[in-house]
Image: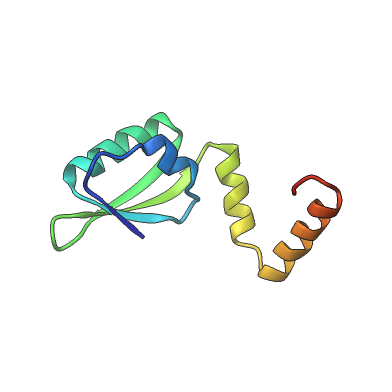
Amino acid sequence: MTAHSDRVNWKEFFADSIVGDSFIADAPAKASAVASAKRYGIKLKTKKTDNCRYLCTIVDTLDERQQILSAFSSLPLDQLRAIYKAANQAKIIT
């Protein structure tokens, strides 16, 4: 989990995030994150914490790359290894 209070490049942040990722933001960063999330097809769930910060969680995405990453992140490690080995042998990845 990451805390955000400074100016953030949300496009890059969301590109590297998957469904289920969370971060903590102050009020201005939360407002910026929500606006950017809408622009980039990300659905955020926000919850105010005790110390006037917000816990923001990515709950859905329209981005195909993030949907694929989320699906892979939920696989057991042995299945990920098998997929990686097959992709490597087929020269899909190096």
